[in-house]
Length: 584
Image 1 (tube, rainbow, N blue to C red):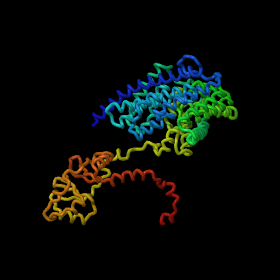
Image 2: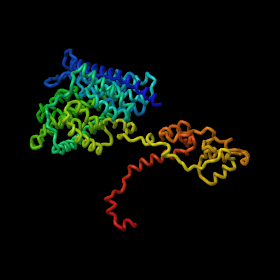
Image 3: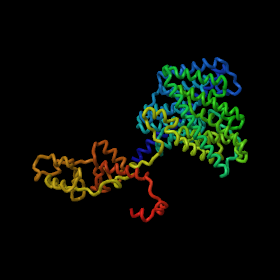
Image 4: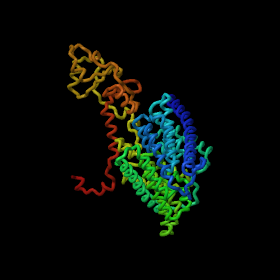
């Protein structure tokens, strides 16, 4: 079994390496396509680099161009509905309900629709679409090859992680994000291929794009225990901001659902809405990486930060709420960066003794808000560190992000990634828990005090045993301690032959389903379900009878897990109890 497992992991590693190359290439193609369409549609020139909207003066033609882009996205969505939105909830749904199967056409339609939406001015990033694209490639590979659904899930996650690693050059964050949002497991079988695909994709990023961190940042002073309370407060504010961002999007989506026009026209309406905002504030359009860089370098004044942040937020709500194709990460970084910059400027003005740089607060706010809004807390911490390469930011990132996540989870039942699934009746767990069945041996749960019958017992003798116990099943054990069969109360009571002379071995199951006492309860439960039995005979290492394992025994182990979550009386409370309390 171990050798077979290693062979399968080896196969997954080889496939993950291919997915790393494919994801890296797909990310490069998508970014170039976005740059080409943006330049053609809005700047009327031939170029493939994503342009900056700083200083650009749009005219009224922006509105029909954006509307045309929304119309094309709607047409593509008629054939491939999964391209709507940022795509990660749909990918999660495929993992949870469809054995990680994504329609092959999504691998083409998602990047194409995203390039069209962003290229015509959509206020999105490319990360969501490329994550979905990479996941679709991995899923397609898992459907073509002879793999299990669990292995297909790993391939899907490898493709998605490769897309993110290739887009941002952030391989560690890509691995963590895939684990937190797509895999729902943490095992070496999944982790090793994930690391391989992300590493290779990040290598492709370095080869085809500029090496090094995506954002350069000036040197900031984050160190010192005295500054952590200030960043903890930033975390509280970012948690509240995450709630506003998420609930605002949910509310906008609800408004679209109430419109008296069909869903087909929603992306067109959304495109008209964000383009009108773009006429007044051009920097809200497109991916906005250059604007994020300006925020981190403190190049924007307080009024500019406020205006850009609010305009981007409203434009993003209108656009993404319409169901068009686009990402969430880049817009959220820009919005939260503006928010953090505002907080930093205010702190610098009113509390100069804190010595907080607006750019430093903006950077921490990006991670804290992203982690709180999406539920990917650890991925957010690692992601912003990799985007800047500034290790000094780790401590404030950690404290602010976990506090922001705590605040948002106390105020929101669902995150940006799970709300849509919750509306469809699919509950997504938020915690990784120990597999109590996989970590418990049969010997630790089985029933050892079992009423057995001799291998040569008659039916009459067995019926006497029935009166002495209330067991449902009775193993037949020979003189050497080996199980010769298994009979049930029903078998004995329904037998109509001569009970004095007939042997139980003639009416019992002489080949009962058995497990070893060293097997896990997970295996025992699978065996019960596969064979349709209520109990299993348990054998020791010498193949001798050791006991019975029933479904009730298995459920008692789960009950023990529940008991571990109940609070117990601590020493302090025990000392406070009076003698009267103890007597009563």
